[in-house]
Length: 308
Image (cartoon, rainbow, N blue to C red; front, side, top):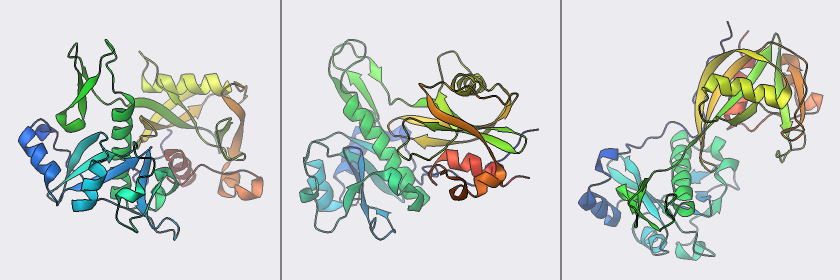
């Protein structure tokens, strides 16, 4: 039976926050927390997170309090309550309206960086909170109008929902389910190279979005067949990973191939190949690269590789 269990948690999981969803509609609690100088604010600027120590290879999240937090809040962007951390409220606040947000902050507070470049080096809790803030602020910035009638929306539930000002329709953050799968057959696994990959020699697991009316297992089989022509039999769940870049959750699987011949869809993939365990252990020697260390794709490969 196909079984390669998860060896450790994925990046962006393990949030230390109590999301206090039952208190989001308590206006007095939210207002007092928002003004509390001890509350923590995670700023997001044009999908980037505020970080220190990136250049030295020791990144850490910067969460603002007091006067620094007030300066960012005055930028007038959307905000939302993320939860409580050790008795302190934690908010996300978007400051994308500022052309340069750093003058809003005290000196030496770091710089706004792409979270994906450093997530594997951050403590798990910090990476999870920054990803949470990024995903929620993306939704708030990009979904300001009602999808039913087109009128402006107002925030509700401490920024975790919105309501239409005209038709009263309620809207909630969207998370798109996507399956990601390592297809194996014997001592080999199937990896593909997408046109979208910035690394010209990187090969990764196959992936795709779940379609309406489709089970996760059906989505795995369909995506593999469409992209590579390989038929899949057994499908076994491995783990999941929030991927708010901008609004997905990756649902990871190992899948057993029933056929070997590859016929790629040239619109989806530039190439696809079977790789042996020895090749996967020494990608540089064989002229290819594996996906980034913080990705569930890499975890699927590593856990298969570690299982006899």
